Image (cartoon, rainbow, N blue to C red; front, top):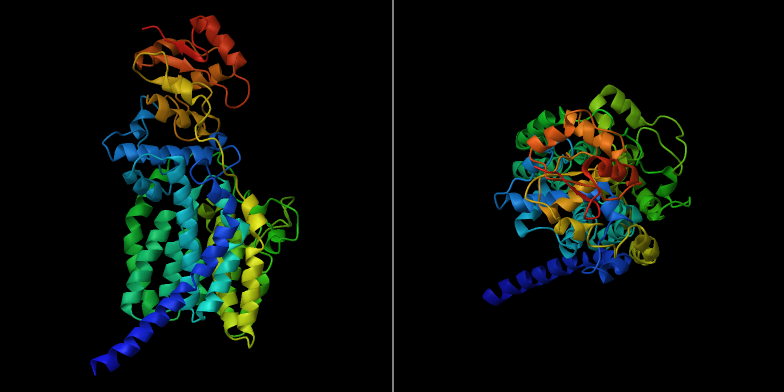
Amino acid sequence: MTTLRSEPQSATGVAARARAAWALVPLAVLACGLKGPLMSLGRGLWGPQDPWRNGDFVVGWWWWWAASERWRGIDWLARVDWPEGMTTIAPVIPNPLDMAILGLLGPPTPLAWNLAQGGHLVALVLSAFVLGRAAGAAPWASAAGASLVAASPVLLHEVAGGRPSGLVVWPGLLCLACLQRAGWRWGVAAGLLAALQGVAYAWHGLALVLIGLPLVRSGRTLGVGVLVGALAVAPYLIWLLDGLAGVPTDLPQAGYTALPLGGLFALKPMPPRFLLHPLLIVASLLALGRGRRWLAAGAIGLTLAVGPAPTWDLGEPLGAGPWAWVAWAFPPAARMHHPIRVTLLALPVLGVAAAVGLDRLRWGRGVAAGLVLAAAANHRAMDQASSYDRPTTPPFADVAAALPLPDGPVIDLLGMPHSTALSLQPYHRRPILEPLWGRRTDRPLQRGAEALSRGESPPPGFWSEAEADGFVGVLVLDRFGDGAPARERLDQTLGESAFAGVHVLAH
């Protein structure tokens, strides 16, 4: 009896493992597309073409470093915007969770930075496969749908922008998977995952709500999920809304990084990071039968991703899109400056639509095999969607690490564009006048520093106030533009610098 009972259990276990092994197919497609980056995993940086002059990259790298220091009891938020310090990071880093957790492992290194992004991408693709299985699609069909997602270059848009935090969408995808089940336990899981998605990135949380509307199977599951999710995300939203009260009002308008319509089919020459795999939309149309709700959910996601003013390529808008009406009815929605990020949620849903459609085709397995091969063949576009093998240290890191100055805060005079002052703080480890956001505030000392950066005379009392606040030096290190006017003004005021790019304030 024992033997007879254990054999079916063993067979069931083998079958379950075999079904799970299909998830390796889209992961292999992803690895094929990331062949170039994987070859440079430990000797370069994944991200923008010029990472250390990219404000998003610099702020993300700085926050990971600052978080690692904070776990050791050193608060670097109090050491920017000196002597006032920053009381909140919400206006600049509204989604600090993942970098704060990574800080537990220590400061960022090129290898850790790359592995974090690679891990997010793997989690995204695996979640797309799991979502396909939760929708009822066969393992082979789910693998084919997830492969088209894994081979869509737009998947790397956030990597190319230096924003790895935007890759965290697995909580939302698993939330949608939970919504395919009935019962309060699934509702609790869905609510917690939705809250986690909102904390990972608030606009992904909002997009998840809209995308998930057609996908709910059980009112009970949804009701429990809404209650649990609202309670779980409330503390974060309170923190976020309180911090956003201090956001500068001159931030870019929404829509400047939206998904071009031509990118849906890869029909128009444009940077690869704006392109879907050309067969993903086509394959998703197979769901026009019993999988229409997945197609509808994916369409909602793409509608959000094309932004308030859709374009065909990266040129002039074609007119106002549906999101423009949402922003008109709910003005805070206009602050979603990167609508293309919603693509990371929409693509896996479209992959599920393709999987559900494939599953009902008579020759579905053969079509699925062809789609996997077509996905793998798109590796060149994936390889070109982001940069890698980039410099692992910022310009002037050697200067910052050996400043000929006594202990004390410094003014990084040319460090405001793209927050480049933050890139040097881990090297000189000094408080800086410059705040987190890429512009100085209206405080007199900062206004004077801004005038000096243009080669103009600061207001009377500037130097005495700087010395009273403990500043020991001024850095004039070219990272954007020409610092010659600023250096000439400082030479006239403080005397010629004995160390290139560094002026000492006498005390």
